[in-house]
Amino acid sequence: MRILVAGTGFTGSRILTALRRSGHEVIGLNRSGGGDGVMAGDVLAPESLDGLKTLPPFDLLISTLSGSGQRDPACYRSIYVDGPRRILDRMAWRNAPQVWMLGSTGVYGVGDGSWVNETTLTEPVHRTGQVQVDAEQALQAACDQTCVLRLSGLYGPGRTRLIRQALRKRPFLKPDLWANQIHADDVAALVQFLVDREAPPPPLLLVSDEQPTQRKEIFTWIRKEMNLPDGRYDEDHPGRAGADRGNKRVDSSKMRALGFRLKYPGFREGLGSLLADLNL
Ligand SMILES: NC(=O)c1ccc[n+]([C@@H]2O[C@H](COP(=O)([O-])OP(=O)(O)OC[C@H]3O[C@@H](n4cnc5c(N)ncnc54)[C@H](OP(=O)(O)O)[C@@H]3O)[C@@H](O)[C@H]2O)c1
Image (tube, rainbow, N blue to C red; front, top):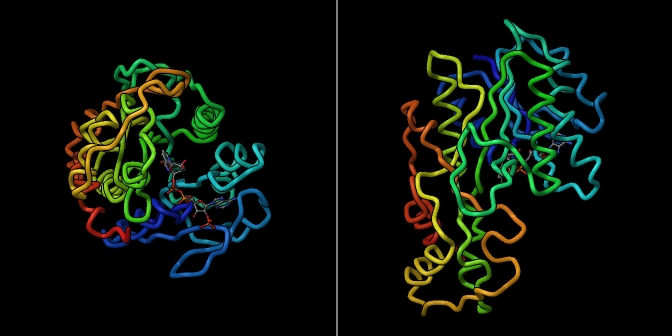
C-alpha cells in the first residue's frame, strides 16, 4: 500500500517504521519535515500542505496528529477537527479515500469505574474529550471509509508517567482510579496488523491492554520492583476515584477478537520493560 502517516511523533514514528518494515511505501508528515521520506506541512497553515498535491496517489491516510503541545484552544481544536480533512483534500487517491485516525478513550464520561466498549455512549467530561468526539465526526463526514482507534493512556520509552509518580516522595493521589494503558509499540503493531490483513478494519476499535488496573496496585508493584518501601496514599484527596473525571475500565476484547496479540498485555510486561532502562 501507499500510505501517508500524518504526525511522526511518539506513536506516528513507530507506525511509519512498522509499516515500512512490512513492505509498504510510507510518507510521513510533520511540521518540520526532514528525515527519510518525511515532508513538512502545518495543518494550521493549510497552504503549507499544497506540496501534497504533487505526490503520486495514495491508498490510505493515517492521522496521528496531536494538539497536546498547543496552548491556544482554537488551534488545539483545529489540529484534530480540521487537520485530517485539510490533508485529505490535497491528496490524490488510487481508489476511494480511506482515512484512519488515532483517537482517545477520553470521549467517555464514565466516572464509576465501570467498563466501556465500542457501544458505550460518548459523553466527554473534559473539553479535550469533546474535541475528540468532534474530530471523529468531522472525519466521518469527510470520508466514507474511516477507522477510529480510540487509545487509552499511551506509554513507552520516554513516556513513563506512572513510574515517575510511583517514585515521588509525596503521597499518591487517586489510588483507586483505574489505569488503562497501551504501549506505543503495540499501537504500531496493531496498525500494521490492520493494514496487512485482507479485510477492511472495523470503523471503531478501543485500543488498550488486557488489564485495567487500579493505580495503587501499579504503584505498589513498581516500588517493590525498585526495592523501595510501599508508598503512602491520599485516599481523601478531592480528585480521588470517580470525582469529576473519567474513571473507567476499557474493554479491548474486540481488538483481540480480530486475532491481534499484544506484546505488552499488562502493566507488568510493559512497565517492567521500561524500569531497567530508566535513568533514575
Ligand atoms: N498521549 C496519550 O496518552 C494519548 C492517549 C490517547 C490518545 N492519544 C492520541 O494519539 C495520537 C498520537 O499521540 P502522540 O502522543 O504519539 O503524539 P505526539 O508525540 O505529540 O506527535 C504528534 C505529531 O503531530 C504533529 N503535529 C502537531 N501539530 C501539527 C500541525 N499543526 N501540523 C502538522 N503536524 C502537527 C507533530 O509534529 P512535529 O513532529 O512537527 O511536532 C507530531 O509529529 C494523538 O492523536 C493523541 O491525541 C494520545
